[in-house]
Amino acid sequence: MFASTSAKADRGDTKDSVANIRETGVFAVNIVEYALREAMNRTSGPWACGVDEFADAGLEKGACRTIDCAYVAAAPAVLECKLTQIVQLDGTANFVVFGEVTGVHLRDNCIVDGVFDVTRFSPLARLGYTDYAAVHEVFSMARPEAD
Ligand SMILES: Cc1cc2nc3c(=O)[nH]c(=O)nc-3n(C[C@H](O)[C@H](O)[C@H](O)COP(=O)(O)O)c2cc1C
Image (cartoon, rainbow, N blue to C red; front, side):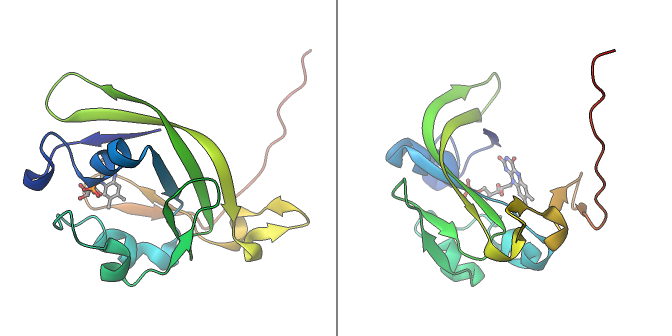
């Protein structure tokens, strides 16, 4: 799921993502790494709905396999999703979009011994305002067994 808030003049009550998903019933979630930060930020601009934001940001498209949708070919991981529900929240132009994951892409160089290894890239996280965090250190902890 993801939440969308606010609207664009050329999309009525929402922005491009929710409007596209209403039309097509599908969406792809692309995980962002530090190396893709500039392209990611470029796609957050208030571009007109007809603009191809892959081309605008210099991103290569891949073709999803279980849905009719493009994904970011360079992304370390991608979830192909079929829309299940759009929930409108109180306030103006607030939506939560839920999807069922029908396909998963894991970049070849992130697979180590058959497992997705997040230390092979630097995942990016959004903080507040214009701040981000890049994950450079990862540790594991086993969950305790019942006493
Ligand atoms: C890292 C990042 C995370 C964002 N997360 C959200 C979010 O969760 N919900 C939202 O409505 N806008 C979010 N935005 C802002 C949208 O990217 C921006 O409003 C964009 O124009 C919306 O795209 P759309 O018109 O294609 O839907 C985010 C922007 C960035 C750079």
